[in-house]
Length: 270
Image 1 (cartoon, helix red, strand yellow):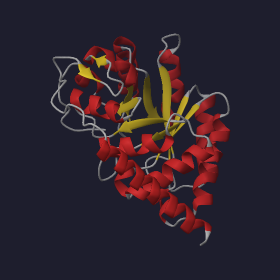
Image 2: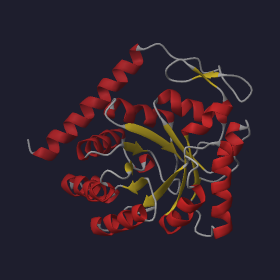
Image 3: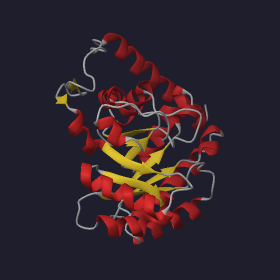
């Protein structure tokens, strides 16, 4: 058995173990919670819509976003107390200036949305974004390399960006769960963990589907307490957000954070 087969078998074993453990656990209450009442988070502690802001990366990644749109995003993040703003790297410096002294962090996407550019390109983009004030980097994994089972390339790709982060920025790796099998989700999460990433993230929001609670749970069970999970894409209601947190997410990426914490539904968007 070669190394690739061994890793594949380990991933399958992890998936089977998680499914078996989940089948033996007590199901949570699917009807509790809602936009008008407290809901139980994964720890059992109640969470209110107004408390959800600290989980949210307030996101604007549309290519047509203007400087005025970015300024508005930052103002909203300060007003509602979101954890960060998440933007394309061209806006890192502007966001850093807008948010200086506010406590709201600047998060940028790298290698976005395909993840198929070279590792050196991702490293360069991340390094310059951090120099411009970014404190968190959400990079897209080389998904084609993962599916080709070029696992060394996948890990090296993450480590290139991690080196750019140094001690100045946290790294989240977007694995694009909609394009992966369960075994590949486990495999991708394991590689991110081995490389030293701080988070694994479900989705870009630009692919065929966004986050699903079952994928969040699978990622969390894989990384345990050694990394965190960010759910992004498809988080459109308060109940969606709570479901992701119950499943193990400690951060949520959404362009509709204001509506979510107000108990409204987002019709479309990241």
